[in-house]
Length: 174
Image (cartoon, rainbow, N blue to C red; front, top):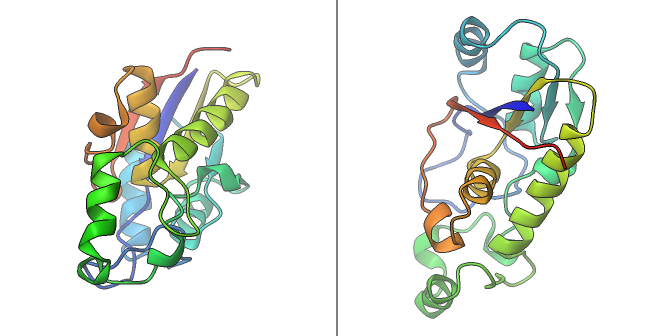
């Protein structure tokens, strides 16, 4: 199945804040949707994270998008809403030392994020459509591409996607 993975537009939050699953609206929605509509095949079904920054874009791309909570960004637990430079250095070092399995207090690990990402994309691949657009977050995009390329979390977690960018992947039927 062809999957157009789309990162939401820039969120309305100050730089340097850990925002993960915080429900933050996006900036530049209309211009981002216009640019994407000019590039994407017409009539694609759209599935999106229910967080506002994705939900709002999805509703501009399709009259009836579907939403799936498994497409939400990584849950950073107690770190969410805090400036990255206020998170204790030893916690960030512990995360860097074990990217796949470190769990921020009250959050989830990169492996957990990738597991739910793979589950939702596998479910979509079992549907009748040959292609779809998935409006989501950089973490989900990283996890999907990393899974397809069989990369370790320490590699795929460093991949960068711009706000409003899409990447086309071929997700295998399971």
